[in-house]
Length: 393
Image (cartoon, rainbow, N blue to C red):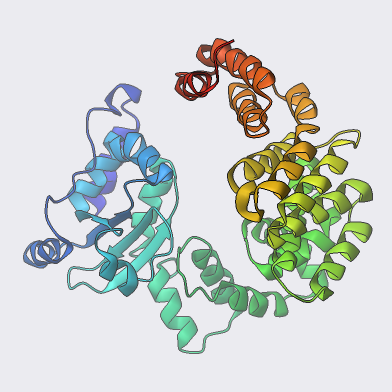
């Protein structure tokens, strides 16, 4: 291992010119055959669990997995194999894989050591491999300690961090986080270590703390970043409330909107939009978005998302309500285009105008989208397709 690390350091210092000359080498065989080779060589196994349509998998394969230092480290230390979990569904079930890409590390006997997930740079990917051999960081070592009854603050802290990127369906992260938070006093929770830790986690207990203690995060994160996170939490809570038959959950969301945000109007509108999204009531969703667009500074992301969802799902409630919803969302489009006149937004607006049978505005917007496509590194194919579907002038 020391030899591998020394070689790794040399490669990292050798400059960017070498970074594209190698790639992580996967065994051109099945998981079972790769395990047999690992046993013969007495090497650990790295499994790259992916889906062909996964955007983040494609990005990893174009960049990180082609890094020369990473390739040398993994090709020397592991037997590596790719598993398409859309084909090998049994593997996905066995190891409880709930997202892509997921990275699994095994010893040469096939016992799981570690797991993580997500798009990441080469240095973080190498750190993942190193974590697999350390009891203080290896996912399955932490899991065994937890299952054996260890509830020390240090173990709960480290295990909840590992769970954050485990990509499991049966993920006890919320429970582990709750147990960790219970070990901390109110003063301890305000420490820089805990504040940064809480902001990195995505679960109900940490979301609850963040949204109710936004001021605690101000010394360590930009105000805009904290605000964005708080609004995303509010939106998610409102969406979940929309899926429930009782109104109690939404009353709690409204209480948050009116007590935990400086701009209560924007927070209230955000909650209502996402509530109707959860209900899949696209007419009320569009109406709520139109009212939101009248605010002084509506978030373009919210406007674009609502327009996109109306385009894709508006027909669910029948043609009459779809057209009513379209009339509401058409009033939002000028506000969206004033904020961002990009190829994506112009094409979206053109498609909505087409759905609403407003052919002249649809053509005008599609032509503008096609004209600016090269500036946005787009082929313009979608705009051309829409123009071809519209009647000639």
